[in-house]
Length: 326
Ligand code: HEM
Ligand SMILES: *[C@@H]1O[C@H](CO)[C@@H](O)[C@H](O)[C@H]1NC(C)=O
Ligand SMILES: *[C@@H]1O[C@H](CO)[C@@H](O)[C@H](O)[C@H]1NC(C)=O
Ligand SMILES: *[C@@H]1O[C@H](CO)[C@@H](O)[C@H](O)[C@H]1NC(C)=O
Ligand SMILES: *[C@@H]1O[C@H](CO)[C@@H](O)[C@H](O)[C@H]1NC(C)=O
Ligand SMILES: *[C@@H]1O[C@H](CO)[C@@H](O)[C@H](O)[C@H]1NC(C)=O
Ligand SMILES: *[C@@H]1O[C@H](CO)[C@@H](O)[C@H](O)[C@H]1NC(C)=O
Ligand SMILES: CC(=O)N[C@H]1CO[C@H](CO)[C@@H](O)[C@@H]1O
Image (cartoon, rainbow, N blue to C red):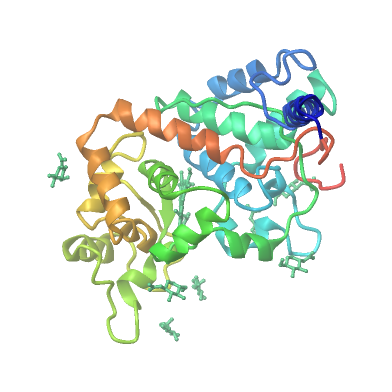
């Protein structure tokens, strides 16, 4: 090829590349023309209801995480199973909450602009707005995600890290989503709000391994306290406990302080201190300011919100978030 032809070929490639990818990208205020009130309807609904349920922020941000880790952020976590095999039916999802809240927002949006706003975007926006409404950090939520129609409990089981995860497992499952160790440490910081069931950590207290009953990486005083006052037996699957006791409503650095004190609730929390790189990140976070944490957290949240998204002509816009074929 002559130099001129090469230049033209390059320019064409760049142009195609630019247009091709701009079509496939999320963008801020994607519904600005097609449903200008969409984002306001969501934030108004949250403002109106958050004082009834200030604890909604935790399940909603967790739902966004579970959605993104299975087939990308495509709203598939919301789909009701028809034969007991949806993501909802997978062990990690048994403790998800907030499905009804998201579906009600979808109903409001369908009334305003039918078949326009995806369930995936509703989850992403709702998670952010609920955290903000409770005084936590904010992050950018570019929109334009489209919905999936497949929800598979095995895939949820394989992709969502269990609370028993060691460092290697966490690193692998986050890397599968294009998320690095920094994202792992920052996003785990969401455990500064919300609650857990005893069933998610009971084995650390009563049946850790064939050789020790109690997880040696858990602070012994804390373990004794949990056994006496919260999770009184291995079979207790119903008692609820704070992951960040005394501070579960405030989005602060106390989760990281607890982890350093060996009082993180899950093995996955403790695992973050078993690698020198992530341990250093935690020390830096704790030594830094809440403002710094919020900034870094915001970056990782935005990144998580882009995981394997369906845009442009892939995926669909469901009319009911819980019904795959709607
Ligand atoms: C790093 C791997 C992670 C593991 C192993 C993990 C595991 C868990 C478990 C077992 C629970 C308690 C469920 C229950 O028993 O009710 C929980 C709760 C929670 N998780 Fe995670 N999680 C991880 C990462 C994340 C991420 C990335 C986020 C969000 C960005 C998140 C947000 C939450 C929130 C807010 C709660 C409280 C939910 C509520 O109050 O209903 N987690 N997590
Ligand atoms: C989906 O399941 C939830 C509870 O599991 C139920 O409340 C809701 O009505 C179901 N949605 C549909 C459309 O059947
Ligand atoms: C769910 O996903 C698993 C693992 O990828 C696959 O083996 C299985 O066939 C899927 N189930 C359905 C009903 O598609
Ligand atoms: C981490 O856990 C996985 C899965 O349980 C296991 O296969 C692996 O050997 C563990 N790695 C380490 C370093 O303990
Ligand atoms: C304790 O854990 C072991 C596996 O480590 C399991 O075989 C055993 O059934 C568990 N015991 C109880 C009481 O659940
Ligand atoms: C509690 O949950 C464990 C698994 O998480 C299960 O094996 C056990 O049967 C449950 N116990 C009760 C009383 O439901
Ligand atoms: C950060 O804080 C930890 C304790 O959390 C302390 O051991 C360490 O020296 C501090 N590091 C820096 C660089 O300030
Ligand atoms: C919130 C939710 O949908 N939970 C479901 C999880 O899966 C179990 C077992 O299939 C259902 O009984 C729950 O309703």
